[in-house]
Length: 293
Image 1 (cartoon, rainbow, N blue to C red):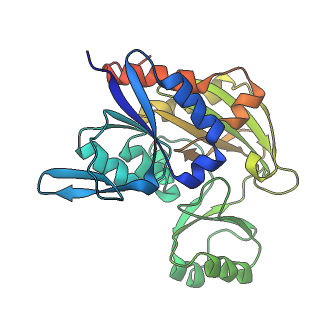
Image 2 (image 1 turned 120 degrees about the vertical axis):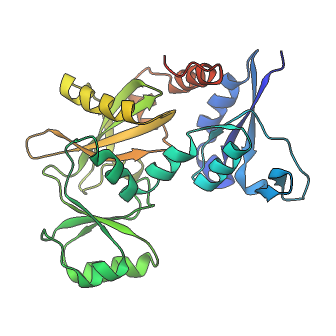
């Protein structure tokens, strides 16, 4: 039986920042049943032709579609194009489309009845003209920002115009400030399994991202928190994601975001969990048609 061919897909810029994490995939991902090759999105040309899905390198040479792709880029259209060609993409284009758009994420998760802060979907014109039903300070995020980028604490109208000038053409979500800003919990998920959780705290700001200078420590979910996470997991067909929660004034979870292309640095430094091995085992189950652990 021929080995399954897989790609580990990165942009060259993201690979430069995450080379050690990528190497863990490559070291563990080549086995008796599969091969895993590092491929840079920057070198691909993709679309459709008379024969269907077309994939080539920038020199014009056509290349064969792989059997599966571990997608470490944010490009839902590329994911969907590969899927049209019969490739299993992890995460799927549907997950990428929802989770890389904060407004769509909040709308979808709201169907589950989970607690979250009041959230309004805004564009440039509505931010200029329509007063929000809550007063400043509040949080304003572009729908496509990630890693804590393009997340702002708004104190007055002048700051809104400054943010709009920085991010022309963007859509936004405006949110009431939570009861305990400056810390959050990231829950790492593979398939239908919770792999671990990390409490992140800021060093003085309202954003707790580790890459922005925050601290991280292991976090043990209580039963209520586990139930909230599992409700989200059962609703979506995740491969590997991070689900983030913030806190209300009583210390209870409020749903915040889902990270599609999630890194695992904080999990690695706070636990013995091997999320790369967990993910590759999940991929093997999926490719064999057994989606559940």
